[in-house]
Length: 378
Image (tube, rainbow, N blue to C red; front, side, top):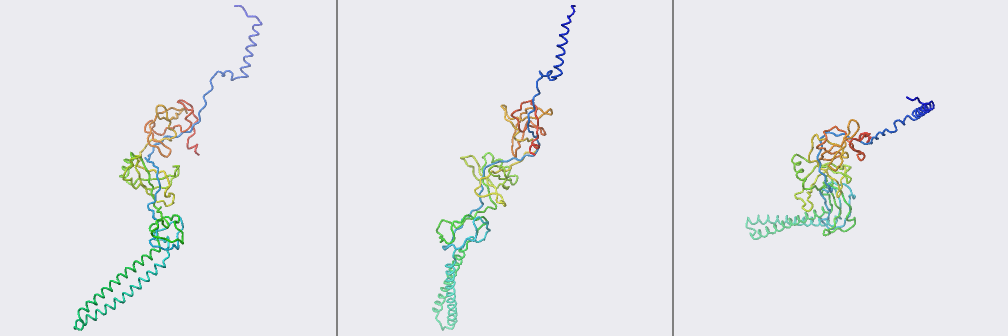
């Protein structure tokens, strides 16, 4: 072999030295061609749980009072007092209005005086009758006179009976001057002010009373739900709960009373009524509320946070978190949903960890950086 020239050897040594110096100064250059690792996607996760799940039916309802009474006068007269305040709670028997009683007190006094007069005449006629009867026994008085006096006694007795009826009528009319609440309830706005002349023929009342303890809610459900409702009623009282219009704040808990006796054929819905104690006045007549009744329970069901359920071209699925912190797509079938959790009928067995948020950046096999929903909430 032909030996290399001395200058060529020198050039090779210099080139090798430069290459080694660059490697020492830039150690990452040897790995510049290696691909960068894929960053982990931040997500929040939740756990599939096995629990008893109540079955609810939901409908929009309206609060209705059990009774509404329009207070009207039964005698004519001047309204002299309204002892109750607008919006006040009253009890049965409380005085809510007073009409000037003086004309009716005078009529009662007149009827009483007339009865006293006729009672005196009756007593005198009875005494005369006894005298004539005694004389007739000794033939000192004709039988005709006795019969005439008996007729006089009967006439005076009838007058006393008529007077007694007049006294009772006057007492009733005098009693009507004080109007009492027929039910427990809440007073509405005054419809007539003190000082006005009240006429029994008028259609305008004095004030209204609305019974709001207890109170009812009438709501509607699709007619297909009636079978579940009837089945639940055969097992006992059906719990009912009402929420505000945002469906977030619970207002009251009560019991389903009954469905209506007919289905609305125009809308295909059935009306139902539930009763509530309403001790805290959270329900108000005319208020719109969201109503929920419990018609059953699914025992030992697998549930996941509702946000974990995703819609795909082939149906519903969840992202399952694997031990190596990657995700896998699992198809699921669901049924009931309430309180932010959904029942999974097929696809999960319980205790699995699933992705609750951040799914838009995921695909099967994606690495994740997980935060548990309980930790995120705290």
